[in-house]
Image 1: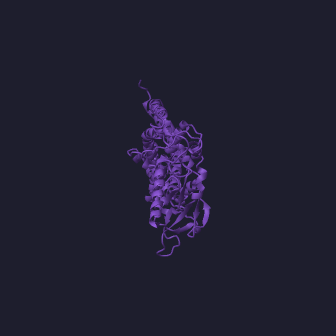
Image 2 (image 1 turned 30 degrees about the vertical axis):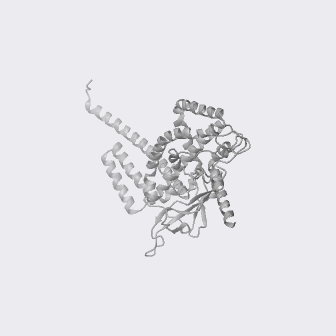
Image 3 (image 1 turned 90 degrees about the vertical axis):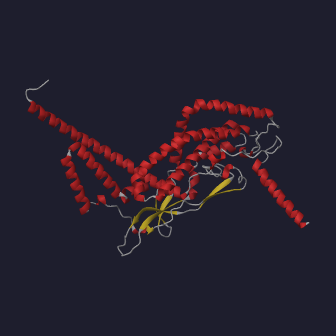
Length: 420
């Protein structure tokens, strides 16, 4: 319906449209601030995790502590670069670039294994029902796989410049966890079948569960048939629980990430003396200061875009001119990074390799325990060694331990014949 006063209607429409644009601009600005704070908090968290991965503390070996009690992990402590480089801090010509250093404590790791320890005790307890061992093994292997993937990804972040890591690591991390969730689905099915070896273990309450013998069809045909019956049963059960697998994987992955927060670390000087605690919250806070330049320019670009979208071209041009003036004149430190105290600075460590980690075992050397999370896939295509015929009663040694015993016997026999 046409109006008799088109000019007055146009003014009214223009005024309401301008008000809507201002309100949408304010709303977009608030959203931008919240998103950037969350984004760069994630950048700081990723930086913390990358240094933790370089320290190689996370439990990534299924055959080593804390997953088993028969072997211990030995980790060489290292120092990592963080927040840098800072060029020509002293002002002297030709002064080398410096950085801050951070060091994690491998001795702090056991307190973060509160989720793994109950599973280990359940799977190794002599009186544990085989179904309890079965489900404990599934959870242990899922956790080990996710820890290994997290450790591998975050250690790879150390090989890109830190400024680039701060700028793009949240996007890379989102893609990584999305891919990991997809990979976790077939891996869950894999460990569902792999852990069925618990059905074929002898029931002996006098020996640790981890060293029980595999039942033999000749020695115990009834128990063998029962074990195969459980295999068939759990194949059918898998079709009913498959819809819950993503929920289980999300829970396991969340537990692995959350348990990785809180490892003790400290900023150290050139003599490896600690200066200040470097918690994850401290690193997030310092990221906002030492990489303020990146945050400021990303904010400026996005602020200009929402200004152009909501307030028009003129407002956007004025915003660009003001940003250039502020950045060039340096009247505000918004576009400059904070500088750390001189006591925190040290020469850059060029080697960014991961810390060396070894797993020593006296009773578990030749078993699957020495393999990493990636080795679990390779085992799928290998034929297990045959179990020797042993008595049903008592807790004998595992098949590979018999090989070790026979090898020692042959050495002693050869030594005795040499003496004769």
